[in-house]
Image 1 (tube, rainbow, N blue to C red):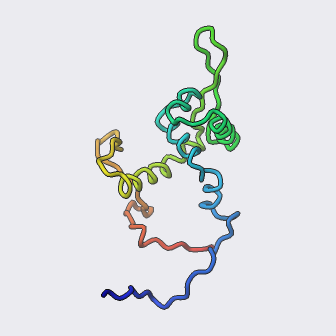
Image 2: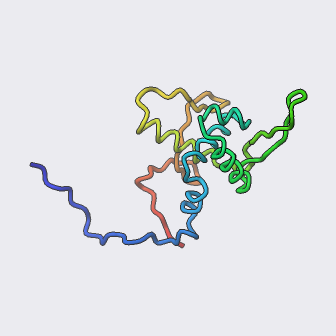
Image 3: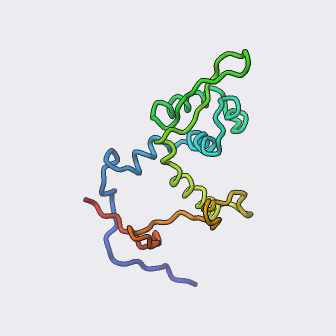
Length: 158
């Protein structure tokens, strides 16, 4: 019979050392922490921008899509731009704003985590350096470019 693993005798942490309203992780989670919101942003990163295309690709109810798009535009993550096909009425496309484009590293990190821990087969997506063709992965790096494993990262409260 195996014995339980023992841990250092440090006292357990009872609450986060940073208030939720002062923590970037908590604030981002409040804005992005909804399944549909993340899937809409995923579609936007892949270039899907029209309401009907988003609805069809995600199989999302019209009302939910409309509500989420309005919130993402209101938050500044998406920009709503008009378009017209032929003589049809004006419709709108939803594209990433600069603020939304800044989520690229976050969503790539989430994608790579999912590939590593949830996907059973090889990934259909490969991220490569446009100049060299080398495969890319998300990493924490020092100012001089040295990768640091997440296990070696300290959160310092200032």
